[in-house]
Structures are given as C-alpha cells and as structure tokens.
Image (cartoon, rainbow, N blue to C red):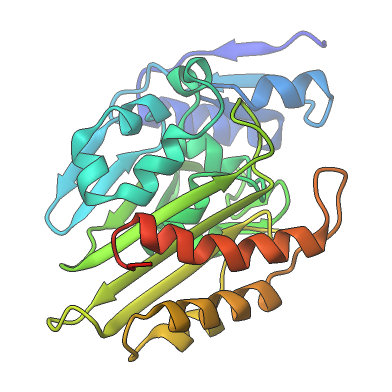
Length: 288
C-alpha cells in the first residue's frame, strides 16, 4: 500500500478545507470499514485520508421537531441500541442492526454506508421508505439531496469534490404508520444481503385504508430503488393480503434484478413476492 498523508481535523471547517485543498486526491474516512477494503483492492488510490472521527457535531441522534437528525458519522450500534429508534423508525433500526457484525457496527457509520453507494447498502432501503434527505456541505455552503437521488450508480454517489455528507434528515412517520425491513441472506451470519426489502404503509383513521405506501428494494438494481407502481396499487385501497400480494407481484416484475454468482434473477423476483407481505405482517400492518 502506498504511503498516505493522514489528517485528523477537529472542526468541520478544517475538514472541509483539507478536502477542498486535496480535491479528488483526499478521501474522508469515518469508520473506514469500506475504505480500507477499497484501499487494499486499489479501487481508490488517494494521497491523503481525512479522518472525521474527531470532528465535533457529526455524530449522534437528535429529534428536531417533526424529523430526526442523524449525524453522518453515527455508528450503526447507536441506532441499534436506541429504544427510541426501535419505536419510531423501526425499519431503520432493524436495517442498522443487520449491518455486518457487532464489531463492524461499533465502528461503521450510517453515512459511510450511504457514501459507499453499494446496491446492497442496508440503511439505504429504510431511508428511502422514510423519504430521508442528505445534507451535503462544502467550503462553498450546503445543499440537500433526497436519498433517492443520492445514488447515481454502483459505487457512485452525488457528492461533488470537496463535499461531505454531514447529516441525514428523516421525517418522523405520521400516526398509524407501519414499516419494516428484511435482509434476505443465505445464512444467519455476517453477510451481504441477497436482497433487501422494505415496505411502509400509513393507514387512515378507519385503520384499514392505505393513505400512503412505500416499497423499496436493495440488490434489485444498480442502486437502491423505490417501486412507484407497486406503491400506487396500495394507496387508496383497503389493506388486505390480496392487495399486498398484488403490489408484491408488480414490485417483482419492476425490479431490475440480475443474475450474479450470489443469486439468480428469478430467485430474487420470487423472494420479493414472498418478502413484501412478510415485512408488512411483521410490522403489524397486515394479519395473515
């Protein structure tokens, strides 16, 4: 491995200045669980690493009115161990609890999981369900990008040179909202998902009619994605097993799955049909 300069700024302004100076030759690191792998594989060849671990204000959970502010360098274990997250944002809680092993979750961060831009990113699917937004900052200012627009291609995100993902803003769900996430793997051990399936429904005051629906998938296309046609099938209808199965069938057909050494496209489609009803059943929205 080539020799690298290593910087450990203590303020956001200092970190942004270092990244601005280094441009594409400086790589920010937080938990570094993905960065070290990419360095060793020579997928990235930077001249400098800028550590974000000592930068104040980039980690932690903070409720801000009707939304949650999730610092980009917040380790997954913080979400996993939060009873508040389990109650209010259960799909995100479950996804962060499923990342790697506990050792990985102790250092790996939610922001890093997004910035790696892998189609298999566990946290991406629930953040799509919750209509989350990414706050991106540079020495020139700040901008917001919807999580749905943050992923551009496998391994490529919407960050510009000199920009950092500093915060993820998650609107808190409306009353009578049920959401869940299922990481489908071949074994109950540390493994990337063969498929990530998330579903969310918001019910009207009658407790039966769907007034809002979200269906999101990981490892079902070049980027994590929502399936709008499947969502439209549910909205305005009574939430029944038949309606959910219809939506799941559409999601299976709309998914951009492919064959890989880890799983065949036909199998992924079949599991989408199976897992969307299962997610909503486990979330408490659907009986049977």
